Length: 536
Image (cartoon, rainbow, N blue to C red; front, side, top):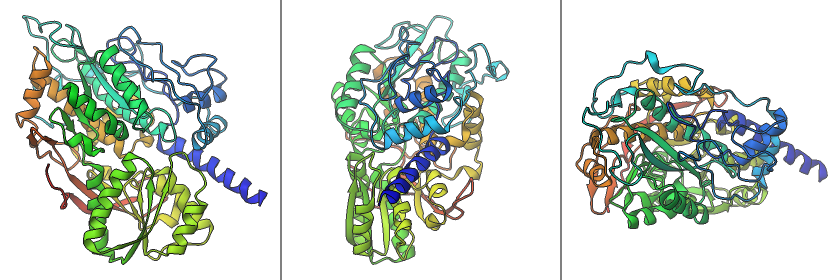
């Protein structure tokens, strides 16, 4: 028995190392907080990362607080005078988070290097980039959205969070907790876009200043504290390109009540679609489940299904969409197992699922739990007769970790695969690689936030130099983003009303064809609108 426990512990540690290193930007770049042409606007250092890198290199990560443990929240001192924020106090890492931290400390070397943002004194310079004039929404080039300051001035402090030389934007990001490493690449994607615009002079003489707050892929207390901090202490102009869906379960009603614009949120929470001042980028979690299961049922013809669901608000969002399709198509749910973020032992869930013997398993969850579930099932010698399906199996660490057991899995994806090499995808790669050296760590959430950041810049450009929240909302509600080209094979189809805003309910379907490859997926269904979506 002790041998089995040791084997399971080794599995968790090996998986943790791979997840940290292969999927989720495992090391905090030294210059993550530095935006072009201004003081560093530091993101809160990921607790697990700070501990891992300090252990591996013998010193703290730049921006971390010397002497703190890996489980404590480490705020960046850099940029505190200009709006850079640290996260609210975080609890000590435990369970899988501790395993990730321990694994990273023992398995990583020096922090992955980052390329300094343009204008920070070293690294690539943006001086060779050609500033373009105003471009149509969706034009691929990032820098082309910059705008020169008017000769008569930009009006100075035209609204909350706006000065003559800066626009203060706030965002929720996943920077700690069981999936904390994932949030780093989302934050980098947003800063890649803002860096480029700032390096070319900003918008009408104003630089974009991002104040991030760590919400740890949770709803409840953390996002509530972050919301208060960003709106009352930091006094942001608006939320923008903010990448934590569970946080918006809590924050959306608050932002809606206070009439604070939220530009281009990730769209994962249904709450983001029912407020006239929130503008979601991607499809809701329910749409993701509905499209992938609609395809699966029509093509695989299952009779029964077992579900593994993440036991929180976002897991429930995915679950609600899944049950709508399964109920309408007559597929019987014979098992519904849940788990909490951070769980490492899935023996009970696998045993119960085996006993129910479904035709396939659907994963309504983040990727790390299902990876352990499938590894446990493989260890028990059990595999359903049909391939599994899920909403996050398009994160490539999943098939790479599970191997041939994952072959044939059916997954959702909001856009065309990067292998399509569409213009926006090429520009995404160029822009991201200019500032960061961990291109292999990005995932589709990273893509969504890059698109959101581009849409944010275009929105602010169109609002003009006399920037106010009222003007911003006027631009967004005007229909100006109907037809906005994401560059990833999807164009926005805007629907705006007093009940909320909708820009994309398109979802593609991909299949795991070669689990060990760098590009393990093939596209099996082009992006289509969610056929079950009902407005309002």
